Image (cartoon, rainbow, N blue to C red):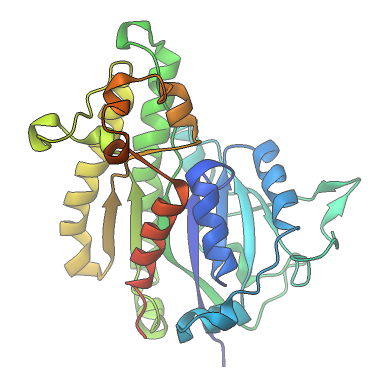
Length: 312
């Protein structure tokens, strides 16, 4: 009898916060598909993952995670989210699937001339239900959740921001997360009965990573999140936050899918804070402890949300 194994899609997995979250999930035994913007960025992630050993699951108290670890699969997928809506219509994307014994050692069975071999697969259903030769696997992998971490930043006045930059900001930060979620919802509805009968470990979920810059100062009297040079970025993140709030009303009761949105403080050592020059910005420095956080802190926040979805 086939076992149903939950899989999580994480965008922005090749760097920054998304990479931190991706590493957290795979090191704890969760089957994941990490999405990067190009095969160049995903190849860097592949090289990084081959040096990672996943041996933390024995220390975990969650039976669902231990179960997932025993059947874990990992893939890396290249999707240019700025190329919206064309990427949505493509349906299949260059994907690298790690062989069973590849992680934690130097074995590179899916390489040719020192480069990873990419095969085109859809995101929905996940590519793990057939091996690289197309034969069926014993277990059935399904998408249990989507974590939208991909994002680009802005550090220019609105009037100085080019139309191309505006398009990329809106496509990556707002349009693409919405389309990815819609694809997930359609997949879930189509497979609801099958997934519902077998997904007895994890409640389906969506986690969107917004930003504290989405917040209005009128709602935060003790903090100032109005930073010049972030107008379009802040607008896209505000849109993502509001979208998440209403989406939860649409799908939580009807489909049983939880929708979460976090608005983390400015994160040290990421593209966002580098672009803002946080150590020179008086608005931020006036109260650094309230305005700045770390990748580890936000990663743990997302992980705790995931743990909250476990049915064990």
